[in-house]
Image 1 (spheres, rainbow, N blue to C red):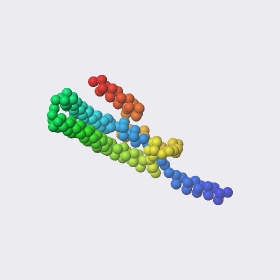
Image 2 (cartoon, one colour):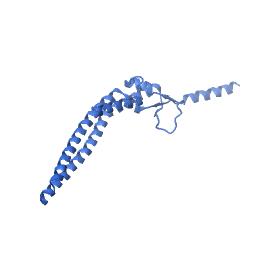
Image 3 (cartoon, rainbow, N blue to C red):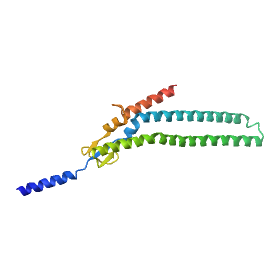
Image 4 (cartoon, rainbow, N blue to C red):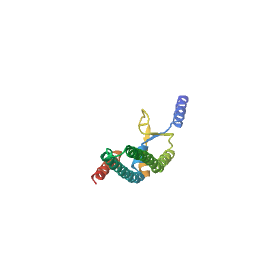
Length: 187
């Protein structure tokens, strides 16, 4: 009997020695809701607005040139008409090049602004995981199945460490951004 109890005790000790702890987190939530992301979005929004205004000015100027072309094309000599068509074509190309370069610049700016935020979130997650002795932390929703009872959700603790206000959610952020966009369109 003592021998059987000893074997059971050894199995339990061995099993608990190999017990591994896992965590789960929504890094998207952390990155999108932290105060630094609000500042980054504001900076991006200002750059985007400036680019949109420049694009609108360019297209308005193109529209004026095209209208002048249509009004005068029948009066012009062949060489003048050809020259004006080339001018319109070149202007249209500049508008397209501007649009493409602005999109690339805005994407680069977004990466530059959000990189420190992603690094901060990664550090916060790593620190919490190391402190709790986790073997791994899974991204919420990244795997087809995760038994949530076997993984500790570290998102609430990470939210505090990232300075995210209590009760702020991705849904409330979406509502804030929609209201902000509606207000800008009204102005």
